[in-house]
Image 1 (cartoon, rainbow, N blue to C red):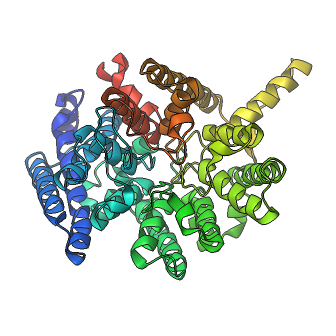
Image 2 (image 1 turned 180 degrees about the vertical axis):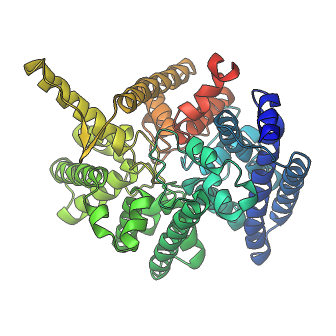
Image 3 (image 1 turned 180 degrees about the horizontal axis):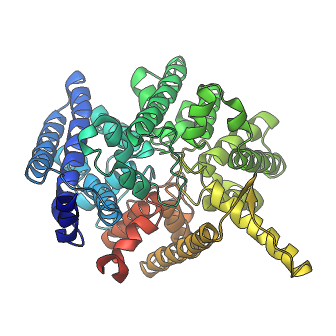
Length: 504
């Protein structure tokens, strides 16, 4: 006991050896994941197999060496957990970019990092199919090797549930301080443990994730317009609420009511807290259907579906079926931050397009694969606004905010209010930078919120039928950093840039 206390006292404020060791293990796993697109390249006899072999081998070598030299021996603390989580998403994008450049799919390494970060953060913003600011014509999505397409979708799927959660489930040797890593990756969310042991929680979450992915894959494959490859890619992207497609026109390319319905349903399911899925699958339907956040999520979805469907009927001269089909798909796609498209909402009338724009500031449930602000935060903010009105009428009354039977503590409310303020500050900063690069206000605002909210398609010059290739190099780095900040719930990344993080 005395020896353990002495080790803790002698440890540096931030243990970089421990950080290096755990990062090495995570990178090694990422390298192993790259063997899957290598297999796809070999199956289809594509020359890009060498790009994946080199990248996978190099990533596993670097990661394995770091883990071997700095193998974790001490307890992981929250300070180190924040740095590990932020760095693994950044390094994952750096390493994940090499297959794009080594295969010749992209000339610009910045474009490759942008595409890689967009994949891992489940943003779905792409630079393929456009001309860069320096005049380079990036290839269309449909001209890419299948292995590259598979890597884009796989990066979605890995990032959807979280690299940390998957690693905790599969690599017990990284279980040191597992709860700290779990909480750091899901800071601001309700990181809901469904079993006492974090490794079991991670395994159960991924089991549900895999099961839902398999279910959607089978349903999509049943349709004649999708082969197995397109079905698995879209299943990966849907359950991760990512949005990368194998088609330039996204889901609209399949022109199928059946496919639209299947993907809409699974996007909606992906936007629900996966701990609730577990409770439903284990027979606890009461907890599922009585969950207040889930009810709020359903209510908001139905209200916007109805409003936009009616708007399309009135302003776009769509039939009832088409208005419901396109309206429902776009609502669920943006609400869950997936970003798939079946219709160009830039051509809609202002009423319907503005309603859709409001959804860019929402997001799925806490504990889902969706990005954005999240339903729980929106619900608590709305309850707080209601309380303030009541407090004006009854200034002496004590009016706690409740979610069901539970009272929201004041410190949680302060954290949520702080999140809202910081979210809009970061959004505004991103929009200002984009305007400085010459983009109009709507395009700048759209690019900023679509990146920060991990949505992908935006507004103006970055609408659902456009891409981000035209953004200058500096702008792409700004947007990809917004993607990472948004994916990690702001504070996990931004805390690294505060003086308090580096002080005792």
